[in-house]
Image 1 (cartoon, rainbow, N blue to C red):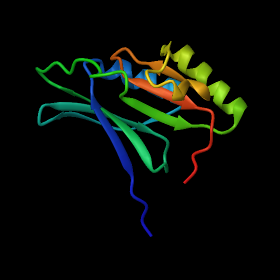
Image 2 (cartoon, one colour):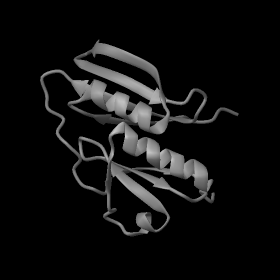
Image 3 (cartoon, helix red, strand yellow):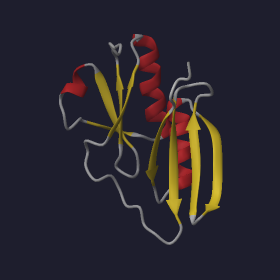
Image 4 (cartoon, rainbow, N blue to C red):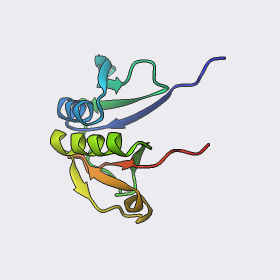
Length: 130
C-alpha cells in the first residue's frame, strides 16, 4: 500500500535564509530545489523517507509578504521530553524567535517559535493520538 506524502508549500521573500533556518532548526536536509520553473524558485526540505516535507518558493518579481495571522502553524509532536528539549534548543540556536501562542492550548505542553516571515512552528511535548 502506498502512503500519501504531504507537502506543505509556502512563499517567502527570503528563500535561502528560510531554507537554512528550517534545516538547522528541525534537522531537515535539502531534498531538492528548482530554479526558474515558470518564474518560481524553490527548495524542498525534510527527512528522507518521511511522509511529509516542506517547500519554500519565491516568485520572481512578486513580494510574498509575511504570515497572514499568528494562527498559521506547523505543529510537530515530540513525546519524548529530552528530545523535545533538544528540539526547542535547536529552534532557538537556529534563529527562531520564541513567542506566546495565540491559542493558549499550545503553551500548556509546547513552545511556539516564529520565523522572520512571521510564520510559526509549535513543538508540542506530547504524542499524537490517532
